[in-house]
Length: 393
Image (cartoon, rainbow, N blue to C red; front, top):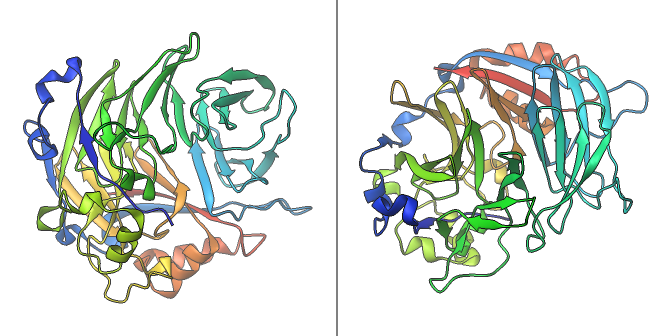
């Protein structure tokens, strides 16, 4: 099971102002948001509008949409749902009403194929897939015609998060490879130029505890990128090849100490059961000046069972940067390996069967529960997922 990490910064010349500052000091001069259990409300008190969209499978020879590792991207015309359960990883295309259109899979050893699907990036009409060994396979979207292969980073055996940020440059967050600097830390993000192979690491370093939760994540914000990672108390903005603090997250006396952040994975698993601290899990989305994060133990669950991830106290936290208001509700998907989307003021998630069944059985949706029950009748297979599209206050 992957758990979590904390970040320590070493800012180069472009950010010399922040050199020698710890994370609390970095927060000076930027918006600081208090995050606590006082922000938590019921789902139907936080969500102002919602739409449930069943992903309707094809009737003849239905495809397998049930995968614990998934990625959702929403375009102007399509819902692009990727199931990353290798060796059966596939990309499934639906219209905006959830009607199945087609699936794409091209695993293999040929020049137009990928050996595995580690991550996906959709940039207008180009679909990019990291295939292992720092290799990217590119296909035209939505017809999936092969474009070519990019040898991006031979040192990175696994790149789950990546995106193209210019004609030849890529922002990547490769999986931790075990290599540490003299301070026992490693950098989370790397910028790579595919035209000449040159690269540089962003000055965001962390202890190995980070990799127990996930790699660094990011979301597009106009022409910039908002960065987040587990245990961080700061969101960062990457713009014009410069990294600056964007927002400070204050968990008060529930924040983990510097000593806590030196734990190894075994110690963390033993500690996390008692939920002594609340922390940022590193997920990030933003739309219409509202950032969405996930937290662990914002409110403790006295009945948490380490063997049952459904009992983990996970909350979706929303930060409105205009009103400076923070709201939160218990996560419907919980500790998930899925990655939703955010677009045009709406947040998108995929609820797998266990997720929406649990939500209905426990009344988690409040007044929206009946709406879900009505839409789930459209599912062709009980195990098919349901997409939720919602706005928050």
